[in-house]
Image 1 (cartoon, one colour):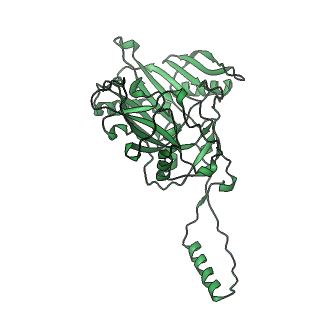
Image 2 (image 1 turned 135 degrees about the horizontal axis):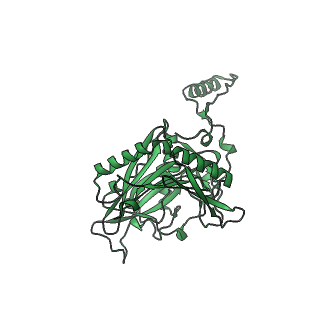
Image 3 (image 1 turned 90 degrees about the horizontal axis):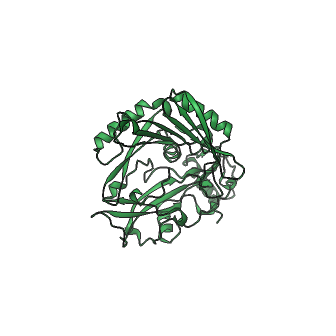
Length: 379
């Protein structure tokens, strides 16, 4: 598997995902002047209040926010999550979060697609809901459904985990978590291979987004062009797009939850070349719990160095100088019961026997620290 990556936390945000915001009102207080000292103290308080801008009221006070179960410290059963790179710039992935953003709280959700059996099976939507969304997807791609096939579920209490439809244009499949995948002819598009230059990859991606804009349904599509290295040093492009918004929070949510991935496969037989479009809607069945205060990147780094992190990497963090990259991201998928923001750290690992990497390649292990303040974690 490319880049030692066995995990990957695979756009304007819908209104139901973010609580309505309204300016908060400050209550004026009447003060009684007992003495000159009291009057001075009163004046200082009033000046402080006047000089402070009111925060937006999101409808959730800090006291009313429910506690979030702390995530497990390790994800060893999920394999090794890491990235290969020559320089730190190779780890750029289009994340809209940047250090210094004026964001001190972010929403947390309870996932409606969580699979408690830990089998990773899609869940959330009913069969009738999946049928309705499948028909809408076919309409968006101007495809007539010829026949459908149900994907039987193994989870208790759910009979169908997806529906697969054959159309005149190709295959459309919807999963119970709301993910839609299109399998279409790839005529005219090069594969996501190392043979493409960056310019060629950008041109291919722009053409794909333009051709399938009605299928995507994004008002302001933002293209993310990145890639992964293999052990032998070859490179594979990643084609990703999400709907840009007018807010930093909206961009972070759409980048993490509502995005599409294009993958063009290759074959010596032109008719067998395929274009796969995977359209994610990670908050489709989620319940908003509130907007939670965040810790800073520096505080998260201190927790990382103290061993307070979540990872599938079987190596400890050696020190601050081993941190190659930091970003803020949401983890999503059927194994995440709560969808909360994390600081994701890329930590350079010492080369291990048996890795057989191309000369100059380094390995960055992935470590997560919850980004919400510790008093809101129940464990």
